[in-house]
Image (tube, rainbow, N blue to C red; front, top):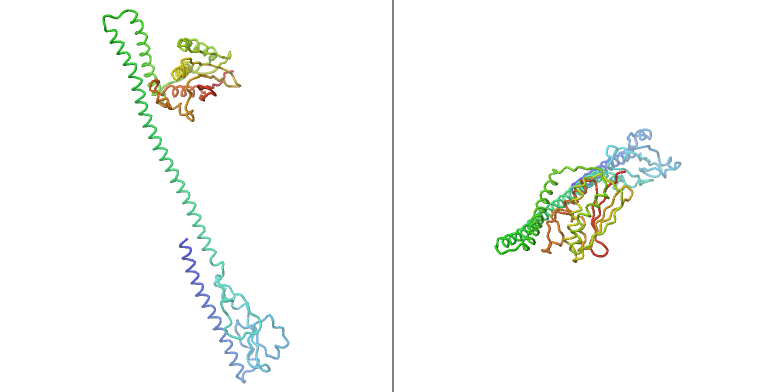
Length: 404
């Protein structure tokens, strides 16, 4: 824009100089015509015929004053030389100034006079003007570069903003990964420490010589339970690594989902009901899908485990439903537990994420169960979602394509 303004100022000054030179040149020419006409008029030896023979492209004709009376000259411009009776009238070519400016399209001639001219220097800036379109090309070029720079500038600003946003996302994700790592270390430490401490106490108790068989019968199952818990934790960690490295190959087969779900419910019923809980089933018959049954069982076990761990009271209620809707089979696991933090429905399926449950140190867990469950659902072509119930607890929904 500065270059455009500088160019316009330079061109304006140049055209003003050319305008002054053009006016000065034309007025000087008309002055010579006027002075020559006076000399001719004063020299009586020159006849009117000779006077009429004055040849100049600026002159369109010469007549006497007497002849002028018979002409309509309102449209003409002319000089009157001498008296009324014996004077000369010199008509000027109105297109002559325009012809002289023909080589410069940045100047234009405007004929604003008609009739007798009282002054030989009759041209002024009102007649020789600077063409307004002389600056059009410069302004267009300036606007073109301005638009180009504005578009390029906007594009680079957008790139900078996108880059800043991506850097922000990367830093935020790095911070989240760091927090997840710390959370994972804490969860694993917590998960390992409790069963190991428990088993150490059991072993120390068994080492005493005065123990009885009844005490042994009570301690051995608890030790087995702690060992199973450790084994489950290690298995989860190995599953995450294999899922990340894509080392697990699914073996999908067509099977009766209704029968498999009922068999699973039979296996976990005692686990749910022995501490005073309730397990309800509402399973539609003859629903068949194509999936890996072992992976689906792993999903269901994780959901049952979460319902039992995050129960709100001793009377835990779990409901397992299966319904066919069009081309999809929908499985629902409904409980009356603590529910989930608002807005965390999707993050719960990320590895090591446990929401605000982490503040409850007594609740065991590593944050891997729902992540593994979500991965297994997707590997079998399904969808999984979780939402809070209107009352207590939450509902986990799985959908799979029905085989017809």
